[in-house]
Image (cartoon, rainbow, N blue to C red; front, side):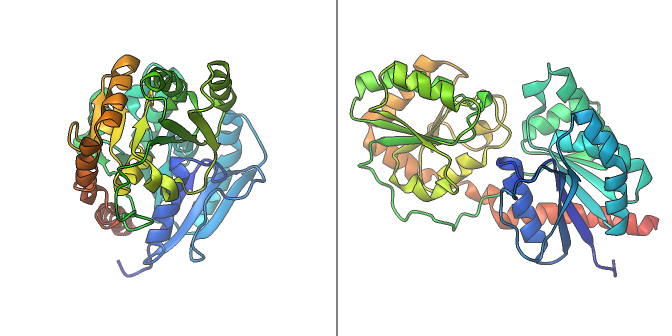
Length: 371
């Protein structure tokens, strides 16, 4: 194609902290090095952007105020269509199923190619009729569906009867060179977990697990980074069960990866995940990992017994035993730490960017031929 390719990455609200915002910012900054790029936040509630964008990325906010989801869709229709036509966007990458639901009605009225990227896992919310319907609509309307795991890719093909060539899996990437500790601290007696304090992250389970562990290992500590709607409930449990000496709620930390070097290993008690970037960050920082082997996510990152331990979902006793095992065996921790970075090439910036670029160029080329 001779003309400049124009790409936009679309999120529901770029003022919200979370994995979708991180990925959107990373993709926008990377593509802006070669292409004309905008990052579009469908909503503007007056808060500042949650993540920094390079100066070369144009930041567009469409709908000011707070509205119910159906009203958002109605009010956004003309704004989205006008923006795509005015900016002459070739490919719109839509991140998240709420965003997909809001963007879908516009697709028949524009020439822009739509890519729907589901940052969750289809089967984790299959019984939720509203979320399932939003994902189905997004998948049917968009030109391509991208999932974060191979398992979710197969679920889309099977459950929504989609052609295999319309669905693909592209992992999130990790910048391996950023704040990477040179050595592993085998003397550390602290473990760590981080994320939004939402019910799906399982921090309520983690403090109960550590209550078991601390009876065996009273000199060890658990640090939990993040905030959210479950924070007060978890904090109350810690206080009521006299765990404050060993369990520490650290609050929100802008770049938690910076502190990973002082920990012995990472724990993930989540009920559900897509492809958790924080596990890639932990591996990048040479931390062994203990995680529930939930439906999607950890099983495609952790090699059980090699660089971490995968535990049957929600078996708190088994999880506590695994944590205690690593506490009791520093040489095993060191061995796992030595293997932690071996498969990170699958999630490298170069590898993932190349996959995204090939997809976007193919869609932009197909649009160009149609015109």
